[in-house]
Every structure is written in structure tokens, then in C-alpha cells.
Figure (cartoon, rainbow, N blue to C red):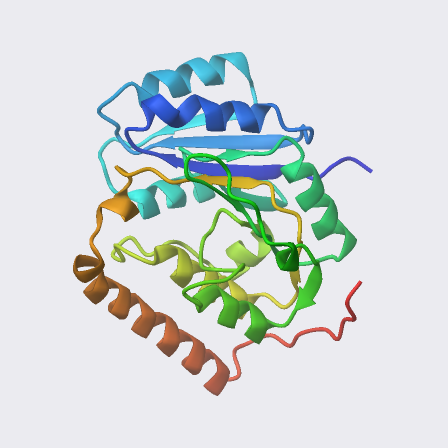
Length: 260
């Protein structure tokens, strides 16, 4: 049986000094059946030129150039609109993947089968910090466990996109997109919407994603006080979404599964 296509969406804005490490980590994956969607959000540095050069060297890379700067949610939406894979993953343009990550993640999704897979990750600050041993045990999750861990301020699930793999059919059947009006915690909102449309959740205790901490990144540059109103607004939206979905019975039933 041929390996299913995996689409990786990479939003990019002014990341020229960091971009190629992540791109090279994608094209050097042991898993070969990839669609790499590099979405340039109208960068003002050399990012667009680097994307074009990378696309010339590997046919799996598909560049997308936005005509104006619209933000990370719009960039991700542009990538989702072109995704053709059975599975969809996201990578931030300044992060990178271990060589076997996609191979192992795709295999675990197929073995379930599962609708979403989440894993622990390395934080590179600047060297990768070790992942605690307690996070290396794989297990099946319930929807409530996933939502609780996704909304927690600390822990191994979190609301990030990049430590998860998604099933494209769930995204399309639920007509999911990123809310371009949400300036913060757009990841958590998308993950909550996805979880409420999915029914099979799995935690793979095998880290392979490297999240690079940069002092000049968007999230690092926001002060705690400046970000708080936007965070509270996003959390209110997410809480209301979850409550309404359960109250109206719009949440699909979860299969009974034992841990492997």
C-alpha cells in the first residue's frame, strides 16, 4: 500500500535568516510522500527569494505568495486551501523537525486509525531542552482529556498547531479555517473546533519537533499585560464554543478504545 500524502503548511514572514534550516529538515525527512506548502505572507526580506530557490530544487515544495501582509492565520488558510494530503501538519518557519518525525507520526495515525495525533516537543533555547521521561508514554486520549490538556497553560498537549497532525477530511467536513480576526491564541481556537469535530485522539510519546525560542519573535515580543485582553477574549470564545457544542449535542460520539 502506498504511503498517504502528508501536507505540511509553513507560514513565513521575514524569516530569511532562519528559514532554510526548517525547509531542509522537511525535504530531508525519511518520509518522502510530502506536499510542502511554503506560504510567504508578503515578506520584506529575502524570504520569498529563498522559497523560490527551494521550490526549484524539490518538486514537493509548492510556494504560495500572498499579495499583501495579512497575518499568520491568513497564511495558514492559504496553505490549507491548497492542501491535498490525507494528513495535514503545520510547522513554524523558524522551527525544524527531526528526520523521522513525519514517518513515525503518519504510521501512528494509520495504526489507529486516529483523527489527531499530538506529541511532546523540544524547546531549543538555544540548545534543545530534554523532554521529561514521564512524557514519553504513548496513550489514547478522550476528547475531554485532549481539550483539557490543550487549554492548560503548561503541560505536554498545549494549544500549538505544530506538535499535532490532523486528518484533512475532518477539517473539510467541518469547514474549518483559522479566524483571521483573532490576533492571539488562534491555534487554540482552531484546535478546539477540530477536537469538537473529531472522535479519535492519540498521544504519541516520541518528541521530534524542535520549537526554536527567539527573542524577536511575535509571541516573545508581546508583554504579558499587553497580551492579556486578547488572551481573555480568545479563551471566552473557546469556552463558549465548547459549552454550546456539548449543550446542543453537536459533538460526535467517541469510539471505545483501549490503550495500546
